[in-house]
Image 1 (cartoon, rainbow over the protein chains, first blue to last red):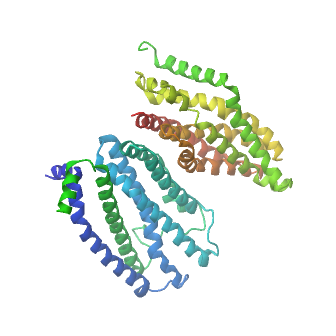
Image 2 (image 1 turned 90 degrees about the horizontal axis):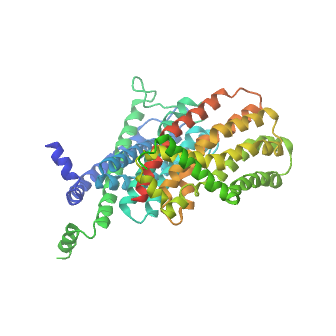
Amino acid sequence: MFMRWFHELGSPPYFYRFAGRLIPWLGGLCLVLLVTGLYLGLIVAPSDYQQGESYRIIYIHVPSAWMSLFIYVVMAACGAIALIWRMKLAEVVAISSAPVGASFTFLALVTGSLWGKPMWGTWWVWDARLTSELLLLFLYLGVIALYSAIEDKRQAARAASILAIVGVVNIPLIHYSVEWWNTLHQGPTVTKFDAPSIDVRMLVPLLIMALAFKLFYIVNMLMRARCELLSRERNSRWVAELAEADHG
Amino acid sequence: MSDLSLRSAFAVLLKRDLVLAYRRRAEIANPLLFFILITALFPLGLGSNKPMLQAVGPGVIWVAALLAALLSLDGMFRSDFEDGSLEQLMLSSHPVSLLVVAKISAHWLVTGLPLVVVAPLLGVLLSLPGDAIAVLVLTLLLGTPILSLIGAVGVALTVGLRRGGIILSLLVLPLYVPVLIFASDAVSTAAAGIPITAQLYIIGAMLVLALSLAPLATAASLRVSLS
């Protein structure tokens, strides 16, 4: 039953309709979570005893940084699926993830440097985590550039998938950089599940924001995937029928 | 062709690439001259202040080595791709990932090894102390094969493109950064008289990792590029 649904999902017209129905619901939920998270984080949560009010950028910075890693892993996993099983949809998902991931990485870098100015007294330091996050941005840009440089889009997607998989070596480096090297960037305060060293009233909005960002990624990726599918399959019958239904 | 053992196929391919390189000596000398020239530009641009040159020397030499490696990469598969011998290679009964290692080894022997040989001279030009020069040679010996191996993946991905050069640097340079960081750190640490076993182990580990995974990725990329 599940496998059948999974196979159906792999067919472009089915996925196109399925994603189209899913987008408004997920988008609505994302909006609600985003507003709740921002309200709880910016207004309700107490201010930090060391950093005062300026710590509140954490509600954008940390979820973006998490997403920058998460999306890369999703992209590489989809790339592996695309290479092994030649699944068209996995190619489309991998490629549609790249620009969203690059944007989140950029956002994490920008908010990080805005946060660093009042806290560390500098916009940028060449420490391990900042450098590896910057490398992640270049990896994303490399995937996007390689994909757009190759004419044949199926071949392009497979080449970009290989590059994404090769770049995965950078992910553990970023994740553990603050634990392996003693740098200016603070250590993790949330993922220590036994006893998070962050107040619950700060933790809850952070997790809500993380969920909202995740939903935002899914919605944005599905929209891009739908466009990508339409442009790839523009010569097929289901797209022609869709266009006709739109006109008539 | 089928009665050729893997070992002799590897040797034949290596010898062919070396002979081809030997017949185009001038082309092979270019990355080396580039390496020397880039390094020589820094004292001219920054002034001949000795402590400053010692401080920036390791980084400058390693960045120049990175750029020289990048410059030489395009030749690894380009001519074979254009005359069709790369397709013949893919049709061979032996695993492509191992044959690719022969091509990468040839590439390193003609472009990486010369960099290692002239590096002491550049170390002297930038007035590095003797210990640091020895470490510089050691890190280049460990590091330049990594540059050839990672570069092979990038070249294999872009060999079908008409203007692969710019994209190649975007793909390959971020992956080169860890080597650059640990290698130049090892040389500056050695210049300060502190032991550098940790950095050497990490570069060695990166070499083993690259040697075991990059040929597989290169073979897969070549299959995509030739499809």
